[in-house]
Image (cartoon, rainbow, N blue to C red; front, side):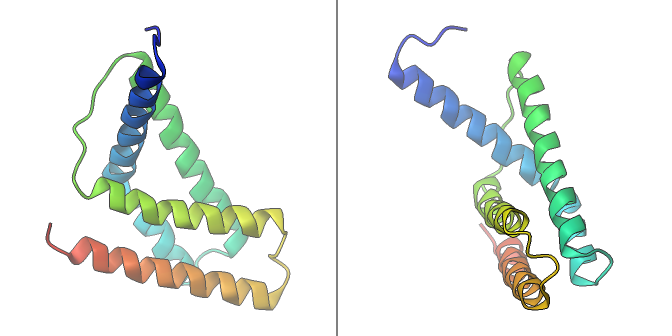
Length: 130
């Protein structure tokens, strides 16, 4: 498929983003399980971030496969909001990993509190009727 205009390019990016949001929504239970395991102390922040990022990368890989085979998905109305929360977590993990803050107890507590806050926003979001 060729991109003949800037408008086509942005339309393709929008479609790709919608597919990514939808796939994140489809595997939300995996993300929620990771969040639960971290909250319950079953994994440390470093392991949580690495696993969370690997899950996101796998999602991206699946999107690439779907796009290369021209497979379309019908997005759920909640998928965009859910992906926004995931993006917050990815940003937190990225910052935490870049700054190598896993040995600092205060940073670890701050990180965990931030994740808790996002977790509760997700729970509220999932329980809302749309």
